[in-house]
Amino acid sequence: MNVRRSAAALAAIGVLAAAAPATAAGSSPSPSPKTTIPTGLYGTADPTYDGVWRQSLTLLAQRTLGYRPAAEAVDWLTGQQCANGAFAAFRAAPAKACDDKVQPDTNSTAAAVQALRAVGGHGGSVQKAVGWLKSIQNKDGGWSYYPGSPSDTNSTSVVIGALSAAGADPADVRASGKSPYDALLAWSVPCDQDGGGALAYQPDKKGKLVANVDATAAGLLGALGKGFVAQAGKAPAEAACAEAGHLTPARVADNAGAYLAAAVAKTGHVQSALPGAKDQPDFGNTADTVVALAADGRVEQAGKAYAWLEKNAGPWAKQSGPAAYAQLILAAHAVGAQPGDFGGTSLVRSLNALGPAPHVESAPALKTQQQAKSSDDGSDPSVWWIVGVVLVAGAGVGFLLASRKKRQP
Image 1 (cartoon, rainbow, N blue to C red):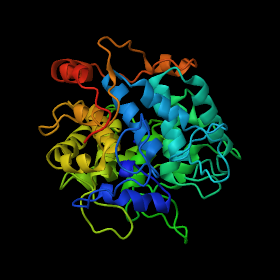
Image 2 (image 1 turned 90 degrees about the vertical axis):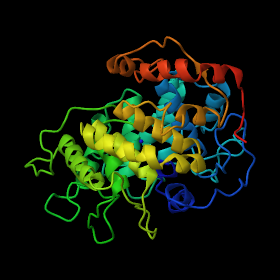
Image 3 (image 1 turned 30 degrees about the vertical axis):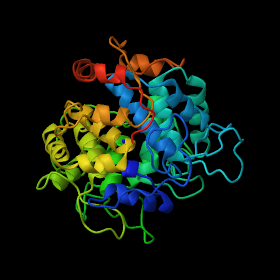
Image 4 (image 1 turned 135 degrees about the vertical axis):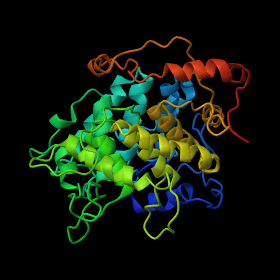
């Protein structure tokens, strides 16, 4: 799970507006940043709307490949946390205590939780962030981008991923007796309606559920209790959208998978879902769709969409920056592909060149998912990718050890 939107499903209108150029084909280059890029932060674009988001995805991608992120990169992320545990999109003056002018949000906080859990050694920061997320859960069981607003699928799903990463069972996190899974069930479009199987971002003003590709990919992972890092799951029993007398999270995920599989069946990609945007391929949402389809066990369809990305997404990633490269790396991980050879480009080198160089770990200690969840001391997670380490050893070790670039020119 951006890019995901630029980075992934950034819900606030201002953030969506800022992210739109990064998700559109043929868009103009990013404007010069209005703020100085801090040491340790990846990318050269203005971090105002996505600093914590892109840093979190970067650290997750590096850990998934078997890297140990640079200390200054991790320190930058932890330095963004407010005393109450929350994260805002970006704090230009992290030494100053958070005040009413700082707007913490669930997406940045949940992304940071997943990244810090993956890095390890930051159990206190993770638990404080999770505590803040629990404190602002809405009565329907879900979360909004900013506290106090109506819940939405994207925010609820990224928080589910954070809870799972932190070792909590999302089903046990409740408000007024409802869990985040209850919220997702309410946003699933019935099979006999237009867009059946998809998830809506949230009901419209009339209460109608309108299919949304971005929300569907995020909601599928949320319904499975997964975060941004996922691998191929078991193939669903029903290939098509299927009604059930009692809707379950698993059925919501499988129905969402059926919708996404149909969306990429002809072209291999999904279209832009941004309001008012010209109908065109959406690279970020296609990458999210690859991860979601693979997690739902629809490996063939996920592979087709990934193949399309290999042929077309290189320029988009180069323009969009670290979050985009991280998304593509996580998509490669989901289908078992090699991110060091992405249509002739190394996603690994391209990402690592945008900030402080990470360290190669030749023999990472693997853990099972249960071991990772049962550990509350901030130790390393279960998400490791040996293939990525082998790839780095064969294709990039010399480069990484010789180059200590702080920024991409």
